[in-house]
Image (cartoon, rainbow, N blue to C red; front, top):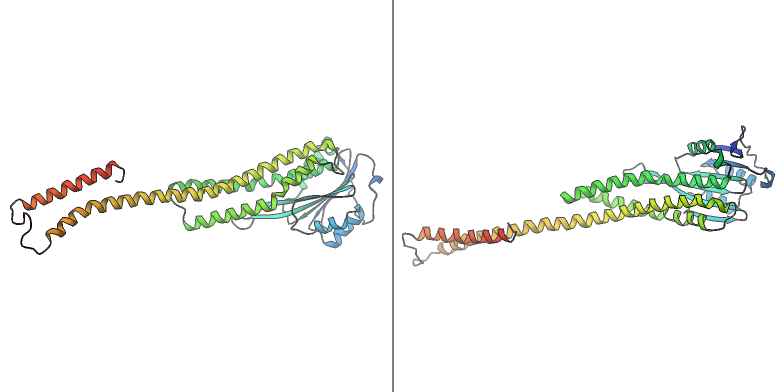
Length: 327
């Protein structure tokens, strides 16, 4: 059975022996006050999950959702039990990709069951940290729920850091030159991943907010302050991701405007030089016509005069274009 851990805690201290998952129903009130079980499962089969469900009297609909890996974050109430679904995220195998997992949590007055699907971040380090802090662990399974959710939300930060680094590098490069096709494709991949992140992880904010404000079973009202901290972390993570999406959109728009400006400068320069070169071209075209009688054609100073006229007009045009910033 894919049991990561099955521990019983009394007043925040772990029992030396693991909890036996026999599949036989156990009444919650059979455990003494201040005692609770924490069961951690990873990618269980339907049969394995059924044994845990029978022992802790988990609702069949919640069990079905726990085994479905594409649930959105939510909080459901089943009698005196609470069912929470949270989505996990980590760096995907492909560049600039995010891989998603799911953690379903069953919460009762005397137990908490966590079911991880497709998540590579195990709760072993979190469990050791909580077991070292017996004072807070003694508060009960609702504190463990807060710690698990906080652990999941903290996993969003490395992704935000990586995407911010990539977005800022693209933004800086776009100032100097217009992004090449490979960079443009990468920008659209990043924006697609950010939209997907917002669609999958976004409901976490509403879910945690419900844990903060609603009167829910198996959660002590005094524990709501802990969930408020998780809500703050979720909001900051989502704000960073939304900001990154806007940054990428503005980067493309700004790069386009800068490229239009650079093209405009080049166009003005070409137009200015074309106007200057049109003067000798026009005069040479006139004197290149096959006529015997043209002004100053047989005059000794006609040739220098024409060149002087060309130089004067071209120089005047160059000065004018230079003054208005076209050259």
